[in-house]
Length: 60
Image (cartoon, rainbow, N blue to C red; front, side):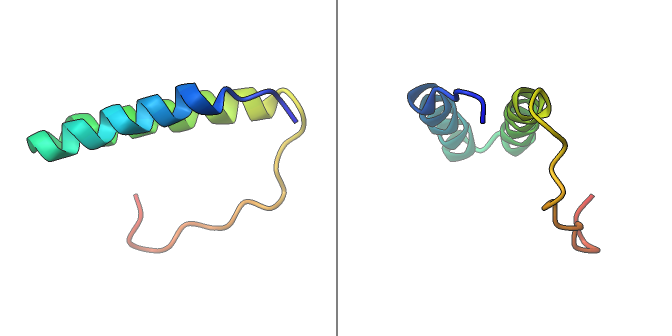
């Protein structure tokens, strides 16, 4: 399991929450997508996850 700096992740989530409070939903979603891709890239260095759940039909 890769080392993940939980305080850095928490700080970035806090930033996204601030963006949401400000009402800029598109930027908040984009920031979450970036964070997700970075976390998955760190995880991909180990092994592909076989526990990934399929997306619900309403998720894009």
